[in-house]
Length: 217
Image (cartoon, rainbow, N blue to C red; front, side, top):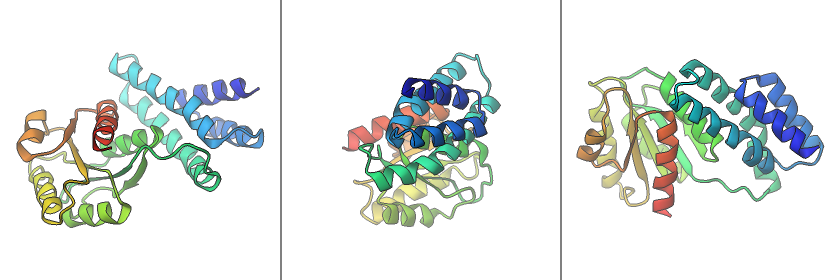
C-alpha cells in the first residue's frame, strides 16, 4: 500500500495535479507514513526526474513551474508535520532567496525557491525588489547557510556585489555562502564579485546549492 501511495504521489507531482497530490499526502499521513518518507521517496525523486526531462528538452518551463507550485502546496502540509514529529528528515540547509532591489522579475527566482524547498532546504523567499540590507538581516535572523541573489537586469547586477560586501562587513561572510543567478549573470561575473556559486537555471541552482552547503559543512 505504501509503495502505491508513493507512486501515486510521484505521478501527481510530475503531472502538476495539485489536488490529487494533496489527497495522496493526506492519505499517506492517515496511513501512518511519515512526512519525511513522502518527501524523500516520492516528491524529491519526482522533481529530480522532471529536472532531467527539462534539461533534455522533453518538457518546457511552464510545466516545470506548475509542478514546482504543486510541491510548494505539498510542503506547506509536510514541513510542519516533519517539524512536529521530528521525523528524522532534518533540513538540508537554510536558504534566503530574493531578487535584488530595483528588479521586479520574480518567476525564475520563485521556481528556484520552490525547487530548493522540494529538495529538502528550508527556504525564506523575500520576493522581488528586495532592499540589499534585508538579505543580510534575514540571513542573520534565519541562521542561513546560503543566500541566493537573483538579478534580471544589468542595472541591478551590482547589487549582488554590494550584498557580498555587506556580509563581509558584518562578519557573516565566513558562515554564509552566496549564489548568484539571472539572465545577464555569468559564471565569470560570479567569480569577479566573489560569489561562491552560480546557477544558470533552476536545476543547476539546486545542484550548486547542495554542493555549497556540503562544502560549508
